[in-house]
Length: 271
Image (cartoon, rainbow, N blue to C red; front, side, top):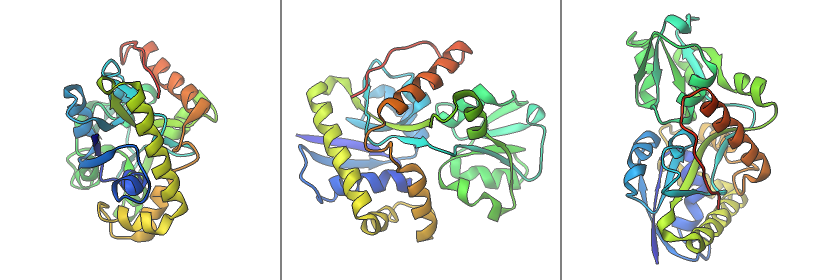
């Protein structure tokens, strides 16, 4: 059986998939990959184009009837999360705010914890810094490795969404990115896939340098140390299995969004 995986070019994703895609481990199935940015995958998820897809926590809330959420391969912010940046301090309540997609976890976090701006503008995540610098938007929400280089571009932090999350959820990690598998494949296939994915992550962690080298094929920046730092931020103790802490964090994340009327209440299954 061959399973098609859709994931992002972000180095943490490719790092985790390295072993299973490059035949470094024994697997239950054969795998092929499609690489697209996260908001594209969020928007394509309802069509079930791929057997397994990377998906934002926000995006998953709209397709939980069609996919199982996988306990392996999740990206949780343990002490960090999306940042709102600008050229200088701005009043976000009167700002034109660039967001990396209306289905992204960062957007939903901002809706839960940030002031309502004058206007939200969707901008591809890696174009947000330039849009701010050119004056097309006043501020923007940064995700992925853009969080590590914004100061080099002359931008400043205006709002730290992790700090807001911590005030609400304490030490629980922020749910950000996940992987989901089509329910039509069945729970047995989903569980065996999850086993392969967990083993792939373990291999990457144990063979970090070679896995980072592989991830650099897809990275936006050529700085090996920068991308390794990013990978270490988001491939952490919760990546192999997010366990009780991840489940509780998801309950808090979705519970607040539902209570505020931002998303509809829904049920979901974790494999």
